[in-house]
Each structure stands twice: as C-alpha cells, then as structure tokens.
Figure 1 (cartoon, rainbow, N blue to C red):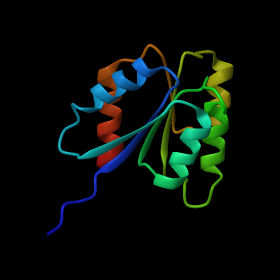
Figure 2 (cartoon, rainbow, N blue to C red):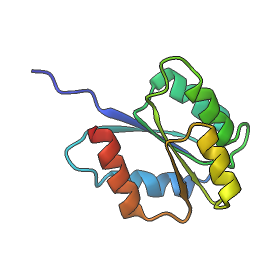
Figure 3 (cartoon, helix red, strand yellow):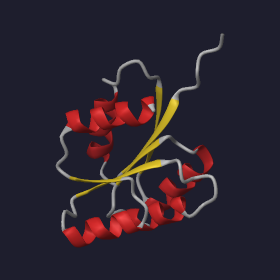
Figure 4 (cartoon, one colour):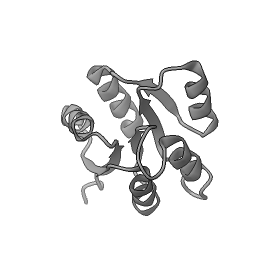
Length: 129
C-alpha cells in the first residue's frame, strides 16, 4: 500500500517572520503529512494555488502585486478550485474588511495577531476532512 501524498498548505504573507511562525505552528500537526509552500506576494500566491491546488491556504490581505481579497476571489471563481480552503489572515479587523473577505469567497477570516493553537486546530480539522 502506498503512502498518501502529503497535503499541501500554502502560506502567503509578505512578512517572512509571519510565514515562519505559521510554518513552525504547523510542525505540531498530528498524523497528517504536509508539504508547506510559501509566497511573499499575491501574484505568486495565485500562481502557486492554481498550479499546486493546496488543500489549505493562509492568505494575508495586504500584500504587494495583488491583495489577498483579489487572490481569493480569483481562486474561488476558477473551475475546480472551490475546494481550496482559504483563510484570510490579516491585521484588517474591521467588520467592513471581514465582509469583503467573505464576499471574495474566503472560508474563514482571522485577524492578526492570531493564536497559534487556534491556527493549528483549524489546520488539523481542515486537513483531516
């Protein structure tokens, strides 16, 4: 019997320490092999999502070259990509921004600073499903 392919997770944030923090948090995931991809701008994130179809994406809103709202909207409107679970992870905590995020098709909207335990629990739930 062959091993199941690792689940892909994309971390898209223009701040390297945030990418690293999320990656370190995901190292604690139980019983699921994951492959972590990363992007530091929106255009790169979109290209990687469309090429790799990760199961889970942590997507910053304020990024160079393309914002997270636009990346999310583009992914969710692309045939065969609706199953990609997108978490908008942002410092923009206003209700207005949350509304835009949900309208763009985000599965979840989380504000920074985030709780690593909450992030890990979410990843565990999404990837096990």
